[in-house]
Length: 465
Ligand code: HEC
Image (cartoon, rainbow, N blue to C red; front, side, top):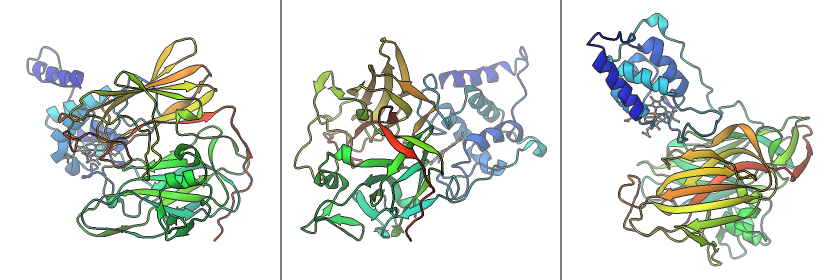
């Protein structure tokens, strides 16, 4: 950011003196539009999540100064990874050259340029971003979102339509009413607990009480994290994932899909019925390995909180979803509250991607790999974590990591008033999936090399109805 600002100042200072000939000022049509079409209009176009369109010169001109600011500070496009570490697919960040071009264009008065230079406006898929899915599963009911107030996060379960096991290669979540869907988590559970029933999208126990998915998992005899398979998350700007190589997601016949929904009221009553689209393995496609979302699939994790080793405990009475891990509460006003987790890799894995998940006090997260010979490599550094932009950083090419390695994740939380997203610095912060509580989830996408799935896909199974 400094470097870019410095460059722009140098241009202004030198051009009038005539000592060095400044390069001709960039124009919208020739230099800036290609950058916007490539990196911005995916969100900044009518009907999308961003507040204004950035397609035509007339759209863009009033925003020129604001655009300069947001790209120089790297707030736009939203992308948290420090460019020095790792190479990621769909990296939407701008290069230093592109930022300089925008800065020089704004400083030159944001000229339009020749119409003939304007590239054609990109076309976008409407609806599903990667074509029609093989199978679409909907929330079982329309949920009514009130005009105001807090809506607690809620699980909606529905029986999957599959009568045989299927292997998924790609998934997309599409909100019914995107304005109200703050985020969504999609999960699969294998069966209903004994005595439980599915009633209007809720799993209710023998006493008629609704059960959250972690309670369902425990009732099925597992711990919360082992018995439920996460499928993917939706947040604005992210809702599609696919699995490279021979990685895939097994969904068993007769299993249940959980839509774990976080709604935000918008001032008027709304309703929502979110959908999950699945792209199944094609006939003959090898699915050799199940995808996992946490390093715990490959070995144990040690936690160090504020310099002290800490063994997380699960409270037996916990009825809400814990999410992530229970750590000591964060004290009021703590500014650089540090959590380190050391993930031992006991068996060889293939790493496909990383996705830091923290809530509003999350400040930074950095993943470092230590190879068995002691050599180190930063996998991902997100120096300014932003809860509003939960990015999935998919590695450009999958990484084989041998047994005897470890991944160390260093995370800072900021519960001080300096954190502009902090809703209540005077409060001690607890751990839960509610966004006003905190979460620590250094998520990943990986396969464990020794844990093979059966098979080559047979024909794409049909939906039952
Ligand atoms: C992934 C979606 C996405 C992409 C890509 C994206 N933006 Fe945005 N942008 C948003 C959203 C949503 C907002 C409003 C909320 C916010 O400010 O975070 C926004 C806000 C802005 C604002 C501030 C608007 C205001 O009200 O002050 C500017 C300026 C901006 N974007 C410019 C850009 C530029 C330039 C690019 C490309 C280089 C870009 N954005 C890429 C989603 C996106």
